Structure formats: C-alpha cells, structure tokens
Image (cartoon, rainbow, N blue to C red; front, side, top):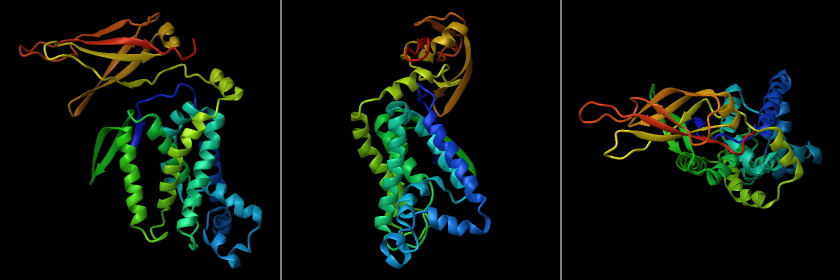
Length: 327
C-alpha cells in the first residue's frame, strides 16, 4: 500500500517537519559523498547492536559515538528510494502531528520515537553485526500518533495489483492498522535481521508513538509554540478537496460542505472538488467568488442524482470558513 495523501490539512505550515526532511536529505548527500569510506561511515553512525553486546567490538568506539549512533542512524538511508519512501510518509503524516503538538514538542517527540525504535531493534537483535539506518522507526512513531489523533481521516492509497494500479480511500485507522499488522507479522516471521529490514524498529517506534503521545499532550504549550502558530498559518485550503455529498432517497439534489480560509473568502478562489460516486470519483471545478460569507451556498447545476425520468438534480455546496486561519 502506498499512501498518496490524507484528507486533513494542517492549520499551520509544518516548519519542523520540513526542517527534518531537509536535514535528512542533506545528510543523505553527505553519506553518498563518502566514497570508499562509506562502509566505515555507516558502521560508525549507523546502529549496530553488536557494538553494545560485544565488548571487543564496542572498544573501537568512544562513549560519545556509542550514544550518538542511537540518533544519527535515523538520518541515514540505504539508497534514494529508501529516502524517498520515508520522506513521503513523513510528509503525509508528520504535518498533522506537528500541528497538534506544536513545533517544539513535535521535534522532541520525533527524536524520541527514533531513539525508542533503535532501542527496540538493538534489544531484539542483540548480537547482530548488521548496521541499521533509516528514519522508518521515527516515522512509525509519527504514524502511531496519527493513528490516535486522526482515526477518521481518510488516506488516498495506491494498491498495485500486478501491473494494475488500484486507488482507494481508506480510513486512517484501517490503513495504519493494516500497516502495523504487516510490520508485526514481518518482524515475528523474520529471524534477527535476516531480511535486511529492521521490522522491530518499526513496531517499537509505532507503539512508543502511541504511548508517548499521551504524555506529550499533557505537557503544556510554551510561548515559542504560540509564537510559531501566529507566524505560520496556512492562508489557503487544499486546491483539491474531497466532499462527501449526501442526500435522501426522494431528493435528487446532493449537499456537501467546502472549506476555505478567510483570505480565500475575501479574494475568491478556484477549487477542484472530488466527489466519490460508487467506485468512481468525479472531479469538478468550483469557483469561489470574492467576498463570500460563511454559510453561502454554491449551486452546481446538474451534478446531483439522476431521477427515474432522466432528470438530474443539483449539487449544493455550503461554504465553511476556517476560523483558525489568518484573517
């Protein structure tokens, strides 16, 4: 399953999430520039359980290097596609978790999830001499938090079936539940690090993310969080919006809600509205006129249900203006 997007837009720009993505990408470039020293670089800054379980190996590293590898491993990757997959997942799920926790708490949360995932991998693969690298465990913690915070969000997902792509919208709790189950089954069915993938790091990160989320939500927001929120509001809603149109059996018209920001209400905007229709999805262009007010209803003629007599009803979209966005 490949997540393509979720249906919940963060209220603020995810400055920390983007900074993590930029830092991770930069360090990947540093990693690829090592040339012949790459193996030594990975063994030094990657996470190798045998460095902690076997004193004769650990003796080659300083205490600082032993501690640092629990954090540095999550910023290294085994290849471009490994990096791209991780950063894409972080892009989809991380902005909403940062939105809920705030930038400072989110940064600490992310790093601790990575540390916990590495610790779980080291404990379960105690004598492995294979270096583990990648942000998967930290991102698994972010996904665990998303699982609790936004279970009813929907994830637009690509499921490749042989050579045919299948696009579906799955509730977040279904997508993430299946993802976690697959990680656990893979971890339980793999001896040590035989597959080359740190499955237990994924499992440990996801579980730690769920558990620690409650603690981080209990910690009060600091002034820096409120300051960043004031400086980074999103001024636009997504150009493509999924609208759940509803109606009754006797009414040919359909009704839905479209969300915009105060700025879009003042200036006007153009949106693409994605309306699920059976197993298909219909996409329509909607124009938001300038000076639109809360509760305004937009009528899209002929886009409702078709009656038994061949006539089509209309689609009515009620405008909702986000009060938390910049005014």
